[in-house]
Length: 319
Image (tube, rainbow, N blue to C red):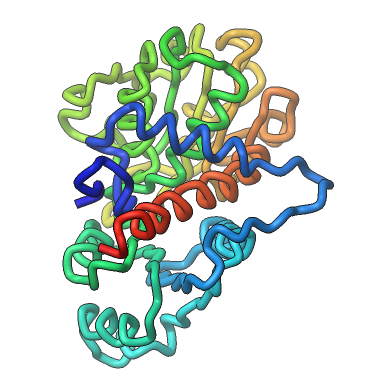
C-alpha cells in the first residue's frame, strides 16, 4: 500500500517493511531541508498548487506545528480541520468525512488518530491521487517521529551498525518506540535495548530482535544513544505504576545514570518532556541532550516525506 509500482513512496504509514535504501533516501532528502536556528527559512516551490489537510483527531502541538511549517515551506496550501467542530464530532462516519474532503480537491491527508490503523483505512479508501501520511495512530506507529530520530542519530553518530541504542520508559503504550525499533533494525543498528518495568514492557517484544532490561543501570551501561519516552497515562486503562515518584526513582534519567553510558552518548526524547518524571532537568538541558535538535529535524523530515509522496504522484500522472 505504501509504495508505487516502481518502489517510490505512495503513502507514509509505517516504517515497518520499507527497504533500507528508501529510509536512507528520506534521511538524505531531509538533510537538504535542515535549517540552522537563527537563519532565514527559505521556501521551496515543490508543492506549489497542492493542498494539504491536517486531520488531527487526537491532540498534538509539536507534530501538528512541524507538519504545518513543513507544508508552508514547501509552498503548499494548508488547511487545519477543526475536529471538535467537524462532522465526525456530529456523528458522520470517517469514510463520509474523507469523501467530502476529497470533493474539495485536496492532495494530501496528514492523519493523527487515537485508533490504530486509521491512516491505513483512509489510505485504502481515499482517491488514488491523494497521499496519506501517518502522524501517529493509537499505539501502532509514528513513522515521521522515528525518521527524525534516525536523522538526529545519524548527524551525531554517522553509521548505525556499531551503535548500541537504549529506549527507556513506557514501551508498552508507545507508538514511537515501535517505529524506532523498526527503523533501527532496518538501518542495521548494532543493538537495541528496551528498559522498562515489566508492567510497561510489551509481551513477546524480544521477537522484534531487541534485548530487554528491567534495571536501568544495567541496560544503559555502555550505550551510544539513550532515548527516553513519555509515560502514556492517557493510554493506560489500569494502574500499571505505584506512583510517578517511584517511576522516576527507578527509571528516571539522572546525571549519575547517564554517566554509565558512553562519554559521548546522546540523549533524546520525542516530547513532551516531563521533567522529574522521565528525565532530570540537568540532563534534558545538558550538553549531551539533542532534544531541541530533534524538533528542528522534525520539520526537515516532514518536508522530505511530503515532497516524496506527492512527487511520486506527479511522476506517475497522479495515480
